[in-house]
Length: 302
Image 1 (cartoon, rainbow, N blue to C red):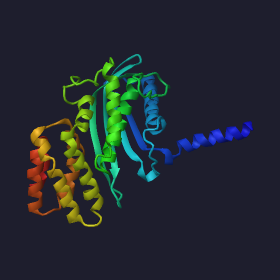
Image 2: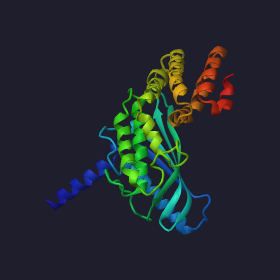
Image 3: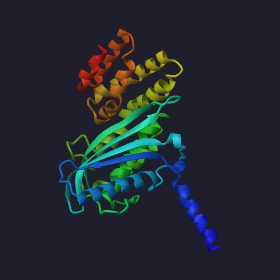
Image 4: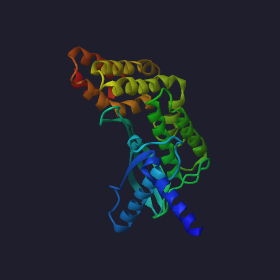
């Protein structure tokens, strides 16, 4: 009986670790360009990297939906340590995620964001653990917050506002962390508009519904249809971006609009470069209005 139970336990553990139960295919890089190189730092950074990968891939049931291996979301975290004192770390975190495009090997960037206000405690060789409904570990909460933001964007790209349950989860983490001593969770933190607070607040506000509609139409009716008819695909992508004009008029340079173009600007240029001069001019005029900070890049379409 003991042997049978042991076999069942091992089997359960292996199944829970199998690729078919994973939601994310997570890569993590930890760097500390301003800190002195020494073996002790290298050991703790390696431990931290491994703990982050384990946490994202296997540490918690982020969604009840089952993902096949080819459906896993490619996620990358680049953690830059700017200062370290004992077990206290300060730095920034770059978060990227990708979405596969139907009937192709191409993956489209969905998110590319840098959180410049990351502080946490970490002890070498310790796991990162998430305690839902509690603020216990700031790194666990930061990662969980961005995991739900990533899921929100991913699900929004497959069904209109399909990511709402995950954005709501991120908002719940934000609410719990309002009393945290660590910075980055409150409205005035950072530069006052580019932080975790406004990222999720904007995502859930009705006036940003058009942005979520764009994310859906851009992928489902645009990129996912390119294998059938490229001209129709480009037309749908163009019209989906045009839908952002109302947000631009009411909330110019908002964080979430910046987030969209951080991920999509290079892709849009590459997609429309082979188009006719008239089509490229239309896109140039539209993009230079919506995303003026990257007008030099959009000059390629002139």
